[in-house]
Amino acid sequence: MTVRTPTGRQGVIKRYRDKLPEIPDWAISTLGEGDTPLVEAPRISARVGARLYLKFEGMNPTASFKDRGMTVALSRAVADGNKACICASTGNTAAAASAYAARAGLTCFVVVPAGKIALGKAVQVLAHGAKIIQIDGNFDAALKLCQRAERDLGTVALVNSVNPDRIEGQKTAAFEVS
Image 1: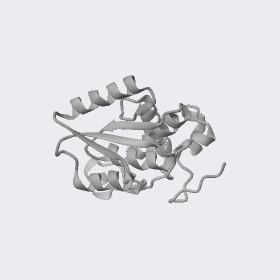
Image 2: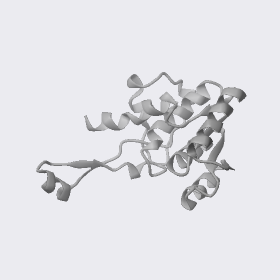
Image 3: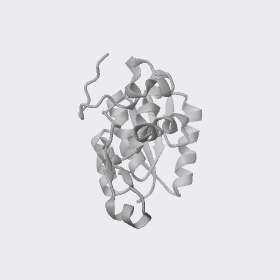
């Protein structure tokens, strides 16, 4: 199956399939993440005495390295038969989860401490149709609620970085610089 992405890039799952968990083609949720440029950093290079480059992860679809992990986590969630995903976040994780869930056709729930989500990220989350749930408490309380929802509901995938599939996807940045 050929997937056209907004960026024209194939995404990290297709590109690094041999180094990632097995995901069937029909379950892949990609927005063309990865393949981000290395940008020379001459001022830092001069200070440290070595040629240094920075990986420009802001070129990913939701402007964060978290897209790399989210494509793998959401694709695994689809392959495993989940109907929704959930995360605790006040920013980039929420933006990535909502975008990739929308692409996958899953409902996305974002749990945040009341009043703590950045306005720009809230707009991204809502634009992708995700539901924001505000709770009294801190980030740890939000994450515990998400973990309980995954455990008790059965068809809801937790997509925070405690999900090993997220880490699998995020490691693809290293593949691009090696």
